[in-house]
Length: 162
Image (cartoon, rainbow, N blue to C red):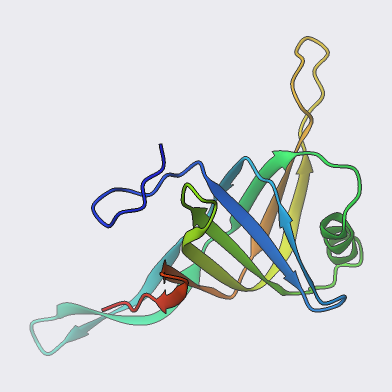
């Protein structure tokens, strides 16, 4: 069952990932089985005031996590070409990446837009002759920032921190 009302939590198993490539001007949607690393942390500076040495904390910057995407391995795609080009040549080729939580009609309810995402690690899962599992790959992306967007009635409403 999918929930889409404001009083119900979002389903964490119905989602999509879109990679937005500027050249050739296209968006590639891929099927991933798991996503993690959507996080940001406020970095605080500690100092003390006056003779009492009472500490105070002031925000100085924001740290972002590493977006980790897992899926069954595919043979050849523009996404794999981008990862190969970035990792093998050790060149950072940043693109926007969008992760969307979907409703029962496969329409986005919430989106996370990752700015300047680029691959930093690409792992192929191990082989095991004793199981009949799928060969998997894991991609780790760094990003400069992200915004969380609520989608209402086809319109995007950026969520503000206050």
